[in-house]
Length: 547
Image 1 (cartoon, one colour):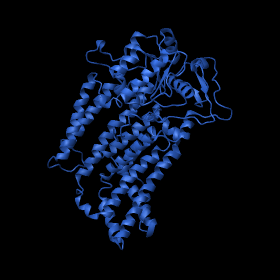
Image 2 (tube, one colour):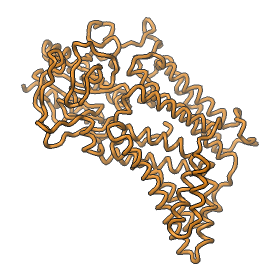
Image 3 (spheres, helix red, strand yellow):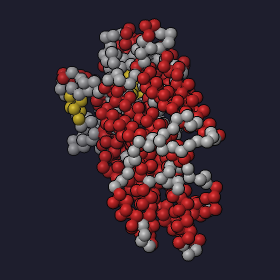
Image 4 (cartoon, helix red, strand yellow):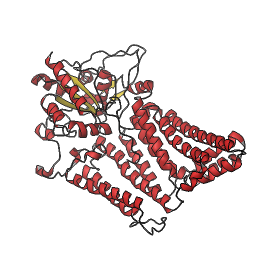
C-alpha cells in the first residue's frame, strides 16, 4: 500500500471496512418481511418511532468510531506516515537547522528543550486541527460513503495519481508564496506565538512533500476509521514529526549520526511516488467493479503493478534515472535490498496473470471473476460456475461468489431455495470496494473446512451493498432508514442490512433459519481466526438442527 495500515487483529469482530452503525436507544426495529415485497407494493414498513427518524449514515455519526482497534490502526498508519515524511527532502534538512535554532537561542539548555517541546506540541495542534477540519467539512457519513461511491473513487484515483506524479518530479504541489511568506514573517515573533508560527511555517514549506502523503492518509483512513479517523490519523502523523524534533533538541549530539542530505532524499520521493501510483489503481478498480465498466480486469491491474515493480527495482539500482536525480556511483546495501524486494514482488505477481490466487495481495487486486484467462480452465474463462450453471439466478450475470460456491445474490430468491432444500441461510453482506471482504474470502473462506460447510451445509447469498446497477422502476422505493431513494441493487441490500440488522458494515455474516430468525446472535464481521469462524458456522448448524 502507499501507506500500509497495520493488520487488523483477528479477534476484532467490529474492525470492518465500513463503520458499524449502531442505532440510538430511541429507535426501534421490528421483524420485517422482504424488502423486495415492500418495494413491489410501494410501501416501506414504518419501523422507526415517530419523531425518531435516523438514517444509517447518522447512526455512524452517533457511534463516532468503529472500535478502539480500528482507531489504533489509523493512528499507527499516521505515525508511520510521519516517520516517512521525516525522510523527505522538504523536512530532513530542516531538522538540524530547527534544533540549532532552539539550542542557540535559549539562555539555558532547559529553556531550549522547553522551546522544542512547545514547537512539537504546536506541530501536533496544527495537524490535528487539519484532521478536525476535514471531518467537519465532509462529515462522518460522507467519509464513510467514499468507500462505495464509484465516481468519487475515480476522483480519488486522479488525485492520488497527480500526487504520485508530483513525487516523481514532474511538478511540485505548493501553496501560494504570499501565504508562505506571511507564515515565515510571523515566526520571527518572540515567545509562544513565534514558536507556533515556526511550526506553521514547517507545515506550509514542507507541503510539496507532505501534501501527497497527508492526502493519501486522509483518503485511506476516511474510508475505514469513522468520524474520528482523520483526527487520529493527523495526530499520529504529527506526533511522529514532533517527537523527532523534540528528541534531537534534547540530544543534539545525535544529529551527527544522521546521514548527510543528498540524492537519496529524492530517491525516497520517487519510490513513494511509484508506490502511490500503484495503489491509486485500487480506487479506480473499486469504481470499475461497482459500475461494471470492465476497463480494469484482474490481469490488466496485475500487469500494471508488475511494470511499476520492475521500474521501481531498476530505479533503485540506478538503471533508470530522472532528470532531477544525481549520479549513482555505486549501489549501496540498502538500495540492493530494496531493489530485491521490488523484483521479488514483480515475479510473485507474474503467475497472477494466469489465474494464481496471489493471497498476499488478494484484498487489493480485482477478484478472480474479472480474469479473462486462467491456466488449466476450460474455455479460458474465469467466470464463476454459478453464473453459467444457474443463468436464471438474479444478478448472477454480473455478480460472483469466489471459490466456485454455488450461491445466490438476491435475498428473496435465496430464502425460497433454502426453504425448498431445508438448509440455513448464510448472508454475506459484502461490497466491491470492501478490502476486508476480499481478505476474508482469500484467507478464511479458502480453508477446506470452511469451504465445505459453505458449499454443502449453507445456502450462501452474497448481498453487494455498493453495486450501482439500476433497479427496475417497479422495484424502487424510498427508504426511511437510509433516507434516500433505493434505486440500485446496492442500495436495496444496504437498506435490508440497515433495517434488519441495524448496521451498514461490510463484511457482515448472518446465519438465518428458514423462518428468517437469527441462528446465532450477534452476527460477526471480520474474523481471520479460522477456528473461531468454524465455531460460528457450527453453532449455526446446531441451532438450525434443533428447530
